[in-house]
Amino acid sequence: MDVHSAPVPPPGCPAHDSGASVPLYGPDFAADPQAYYDHLRSFGPTAPVELAPGVEATLVTDYTAALNLLRDPAFRKDARRWRDLHSGKVPEDSPVVPLLAYRPNCMFADGAEHQRLRQAVTDSMARVDSRRLAQITEQVSTYLIAQFATRGSADLMADYARQLPLFVFNELFGCPARTGDRVLVGITGMFDGVNAAESAQLLYAAVGELVALKREQPGDDVTSWLMEHEAGLTDDEMVHQLSLLLGAGAEPLRNLIGNTLHRILTHDRDAYQDVRDAVNDTLWKNPPIANYAAHYPAEDRTFAGRQVSAGRLMLVGFAAANAGMARTEGHHTGNRASLAWSAGPHACPSQRPATGITVTAVDNLLGRLPDIELAVPEQLLTWRPGPFHRALNALPVRFGAVQAAERPTAPVPPQRTTAQAGHSADQHRAGGPGKWSQFLAWLRK
Ligand code: HEM
Image (tube, rainbow, N blue to C red):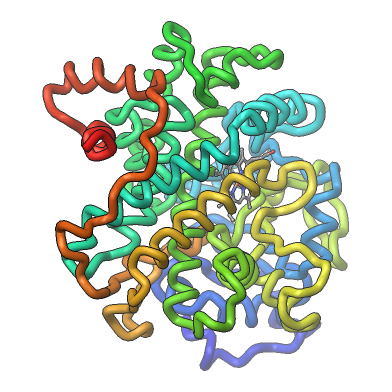
């Protein structure tokens, strides 16, 4: 559908009530989502969308309506209420099902159960020391830059943004390298909607191994802290909570890094006071999670002037709502928060660490390769398909190659953790050094 050439009917026009949904998948949407959001906002605060063939939803595109939905307990997160899935209308093998179907973790829980599961996450994440996190991130960042610095060119998605969260999480979650690699493959497949069911299986199997490992050998890591939390998580809950943390963390984090680098490389760098300012601008104008926060009305009701039935899938259009707000209120300098992290009881509990990792990763890269620039015209950059995320396929750059002798050197080595100790045994069984052990060897040089 070419939304530019399609006439946009005014709000209230019967065309809007015809029930025709706007598809949020395919190359046209990926190429220019803002044109789609402009069109969707013309429906009023909500619009009918199709997330994948046969998967209908209502998208909330207005900032205030989005806050109303996110803060109203009559809209539930428990996806077992999703009427179209349970009636068989939604194909079970649809690529969007793995990211929407119920799992026993905090994202799909309501009320007291949500509080119990979420508290375990927030308390465990709060134990992460921000200086240690900055140090790990800088070490990983410096290592990854060293891998391509002598080439004079790189794909910042494949060579940098995609790998960095995995390495940082390996350390934070006490994840052995082999497990961590499979976790990332699983998460990427789920978000791309490619072999989605198989990817989900891969992720859950790898995390199951991690839980078994930590029951035997607890360490100084988020996995062990979750395990010992007073919420008393069962093994099954541990697997689902951890998969959520890894999935909800690694995928948007890599895209926040990628989208921020994209923003800096395609805009006047002097327009930003510092990297944090560029991150904030990205969160407003190109948020890594564009449409999500699935909710289901507990009963038939009116919302934002329209009738919605119980169990109808409703999503929040973070990108569309942000853009509408920025248009009416101007640049992001007001008191309003960007919706990139969502809002209400399910808002992202990791905003601070995620922002910290992104700022350190981008700062270190620009500091070490100050003349870095896009290697292709901006119009040639492509974005991954799918309704939920906003993610570049690749970000090709060039820069003055750093001679081998002046390759970035490692900052202070990290303390040895259970994650690394666990990895040695794992590596021994696998019969060869993985990426994580190569990183450790580089640090010891
Ligand atoms: C360290 C990295 C991250 C971790 C561990 C993490 C973890 C989580 C968790 C556990 C939730 C569910 C909270 C609940 O249901 O109560 C969540 C929600 C969310 N996170 Fe994050 N996150 C991370 C990074 C990010 C990034 C970079 C973004 C994008 C800017 C983001 C955006 C969101 C959004 C929009 C939600 C709400 C989703 C929904 O309600 O469906 N997160 N995050």
